[in-house]
Length: 304
Ligand SMILES: Nc1ncnc2c1ncn2[C@@H]1O[C@H](COP(=O)(O)OP(=O)(O)OP(=O)(O)O)[C@@H](O)[C@H]1O
Image 1 (tube, protein in one colour):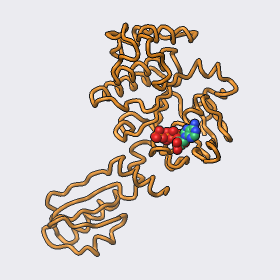
Image 2 (cartoon, rainbow, N blue to C red):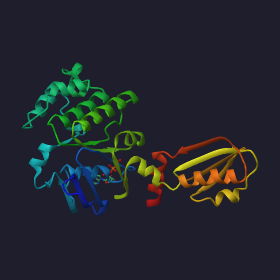
Image 3 (cartoon, helix red, strand yellow):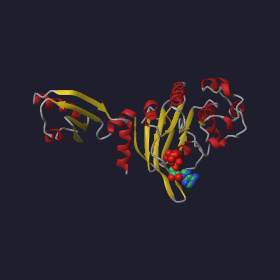
Image 4 (cartoon, rainbow, N blue to C red):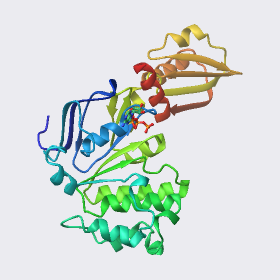
């Protein structure tokens, strides 16, 4: 293992509420400069995990380090280098956008220029608007701005684009990529498969308090049992039995005159040589990759 690369280290973290375990031995390490995603079903323990990273919760067991510091014992120092998105309820309804940005930037020794940040986030037209009067998208963007205003080295974003329309979601993704490109490490909790695929360098899939997979988006897709789908219409009949024996073939289905095989890359090659051996032509041959959705369902089902 490369020492000194990880800016966030979570090691064997456990957390129970009223005797019920919600985080059950979670470990992962986030490298400096990456966008690291935490993906999982409702109630999987994602928020609790990132709250332990931010020092908002104390693990019952295990350790958390952010830039080598303990978020609980070194709370002040961690707060200065870690920006976290606020929950909506944490802002005063009467505070205006400009007041909130100015107030929060005053908490930090070396804050970002909040006007520049607000402009990048499209908030400059709402400086005088009170928090309570902001639209859902504006509130979301303000919470991102407040997470970034202290010039953090690490930013924790939980359900970043929930409630945003598709356009605002894409704009936010672009912003997060810019943030990462400026050298900030991003820890991102998300429900959206597309968001995870687009943004994350690596993803930890958490289910029932445990990490069930940790990989790049394409690594997760490739790991699913039936990551490749091959379909074609054969020029002459082919027996299912022959197809089912192919290496990696997980299932063979017929849809009218088409054959649909789920398998792996190896299955694709085997199908092609089988067809060649029998001098069968494949009409409209299609090979498609499973999606992150498929991989995710596969992984969380395996865990269950
Ligand atoms: N303060 C608390 N007291 C008691 N139970 C809690 C508390 N906070 C969270 N829980 C419970 O712990 C479990 C894990 O919650 P957590 O918010 O960490 O999951 P999550 O993966 O972020 O879920 P979601 O995607 O729904 O936000 C849930 O069943 C939740 O109801």
